[in-house]
Image 1: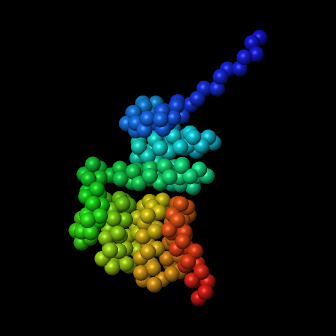
Image 2: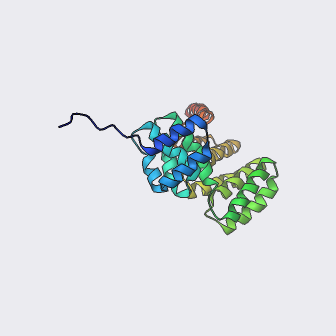
Length: 222
């Protein structure tokens, strides 16, 4: 009887990930992963006990996943590995942009660009139309909240952040925006609660962490 041990085979996704790290060819990585792995399989691999496999799976979900991967990527933001957490955060932003029909995705892209251009009243108009057509579209609520905040309509911004978080409980950006709006309304208790919620979702928000420390001290002194 032979005493030779059978060599341990490297999982395919790990080989693909290592090639990606070598050549940074995201198109090749995405195409190869898509040929061999379904989204559900990638979601399971994202919870692997091996850090490198979690990295590979979370990266792939960021490229290929739809909103079905929101929960998996949201949980990955709490991973012990900093790289997994970073990939998960980037992946979530990508997944959120893929919600809805092609027309709705085009519209939310326009709305986000209008926010960047400080065309806030136009954002409110277009985002309102989008929330009426697609009330389940969390990013539409969030983008309108950003515009409301910039216009000084802080209570409206808070309301829209609540809507975004009701639809998408992993929307740490909406939780952060809500905390900032409560600060503007001089409500440190609610601001602290909102910032803590954002940190529970994404522990790598260092600016938010600093706000939590400051506000916790302020509230205790009252």
